[in-house]
Image (cartoon, rainbow, N blue to C red; front, side, top):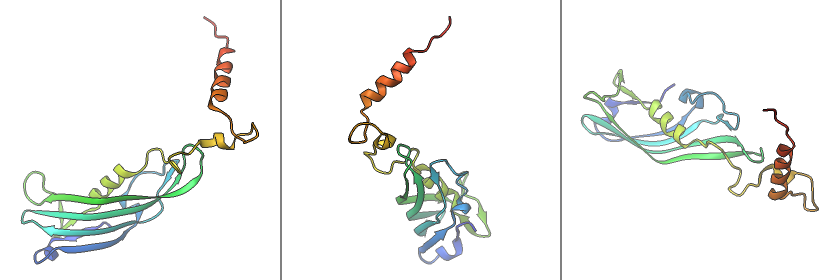
Length: 162
């Protein structure tokens, strides 16, 4: 069920809206290979009537199951939009569509969440990747110079025909 705000409830005072929205309702697209959306979106919002518009402000939180793009470790990241705000005009050419005196906030929530989803999630900023697990050396780590040299050495052995 989409997140709807009934304009009749805004006429006397601002409306406090909080709860959870199933992630399927947001229609954020298919599962990414490293970002998995399985948890509901939590929201704490305040909707205010501005005569010919509605102002919605608050915060959004969405736990996201991720896989580190460097080491493939699974972890959960809390995606937050602490200063969510949207101005929804009710008149004019930019007016939002109304369904029985209600405004659907779902597309606006979707947009801000999509903008905050990680493109390349890391389990920690200094993750060294799979090289920390590679065999070699007493410490179990390989140096980048050795790894780089072996990659170039393999390329140098290629015999390409003209």
